[in-house]
Image (cartoon, rainbow, N blue to C red; front, side, top):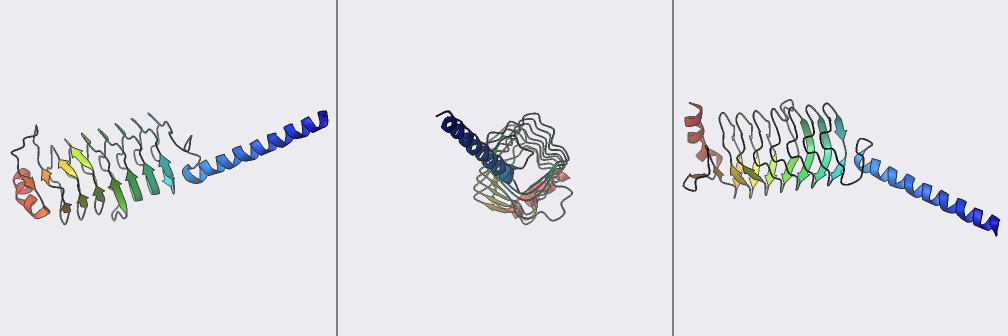
Length: 217
């Protein structure tokens, strides 16, 4: 009986060990060894500057106040992640989708500036309220069901972007480029200081040209 009990114990230990090993491999296959967990990774205040993140799925993770300055994100999918107050200054992004992510008060200063031809970048149902997008490069990006309330878009490049069902009320659009941008059910209401319902809604890039000309003179 003792031998049978010992054999059973050893068998269960091996099975549990294999199971843990499989789980660890699953984590790494999705998130890489950089992330502490498959989901709900707490990366608050984490210094991820100059990191290269390739072919990863990052789910339900907290990047609150994290530093992603000059980090490089490629072939990634971010789902329901918190980037509140995070720094994405000079972050390089290519072939990345962000879905249901919160970028409130995030700093996008010179975001993707070094990426001359951004491709396949999507933000779906994301929040950018009070974000700083000064001199950011969002060329060719698709924004769907996103909120841009009280956003500083000064000097940002939205050339050939697609805005689909977005709420766009920036506080600054000095030297902002909307050339070729598509505003599909996404009128831009320029809010200089406080929201005023009487301000005109600009429904396409051509309507914005006169306003931008006045602002930049």
